[in-house]
Length: 503
Image 1: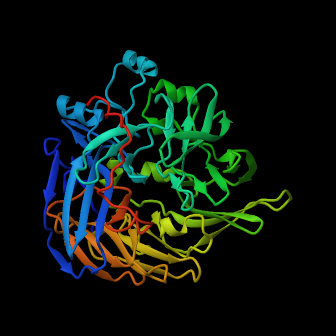
Image 2: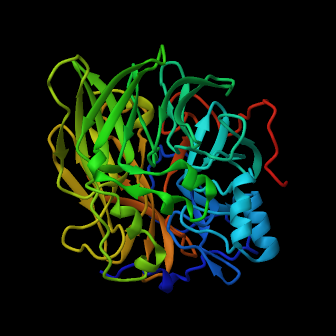
Image 3: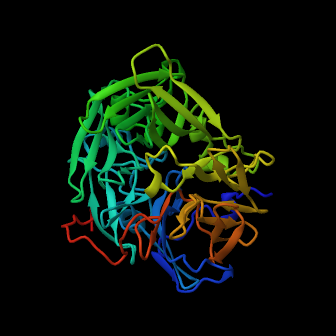
């Protein structure tokens, strides 16, 4: 199986001059389920090159939104570069203008020092897509989240958790309580006295601070956990001196250092009161993604995709991904148990499954915070073919520990998004939607798999390759995201929106 070397696809991605692309009717092979009606929205980098400059890391690049609309067994497609200051300036000047995760524009030393007094941060929100009430947001770890119209993919405003932007980062996986519809997210404020801050948003999207924890050396945090009663901060020993970060002499992630001697710790807050109720320490590990979190008797259970260290971040530098023999570290599902009562019983964990797992998903709208959830899906790397990029999809049954995989020669899938069949009684009765790269065809496709068996049901072929993205969201015509209650793509919030910066 060939590795998907970026050189074979053109490292740059889609030209900046091609703002958007629309294909009304993609060729479909196989048979799409008659009940599958709705839109898959995906986010990720649209280009790794601006003029003669190249971004350095998979987590860099200018954001591009993708829309696959499925109706009456037909699929249409559209994409658009996310309208932002970062995109506008890159297109106007032919250069990278804003610092990214691992890429910094060429600046003089004076300009670098001056940047600590400059509140401008990138607004290339390329990591995730979220729906809050009837507003759709492109999310990034930077504090500026960009609202967009799901039909046109045009930017219509921005959202921030708190006033000000410099020295703040957010997680890109907010959690929404299925009962109250309140949404929570975590902001890290880097300062001489740094702090983790949890925020809650009610239906009117007014963010309120609900909990906080001061920290001397903040950790890199991509996500957090939420159970029915608690908010869970998993703090890994990939930490930064905040003043070093504020000087911004290096790209963001290159200011962090792996300090395994610190170990890792779980800090737990009561959702109702905001009080810190528990701090539990364990051995060092690293994770990007929480999967689910729930109470089980006297334990708080936290499921995460874990690594023994943070080397996985270095594996995603594009220069390394050029190497067809590169091996990406395995992420594997761990279940941590945190004793809620005081006593001598330590934190414990077990590994669930043997296959690699990353970009995890499940029937989130129905089963978030629910200990009965059973089926987890993700991208994976074949144990028989470690070299290259993610080359298979895995389905893990948490009850039986059975694992199924899908793979095909020279096919490299993205995050599988679960869509449940209306009226189903079995949790895994539905399909998985993934954007898969066909290296031989030099183009991508929307892949549809049976979620229970991982058999291929159908695919809709695109005429071009799509750069590997990260996360997406399915919105049914008749239901909310992935079947979570009534809603419609046509329904739009009447709330006043801020225009995107520079537009």
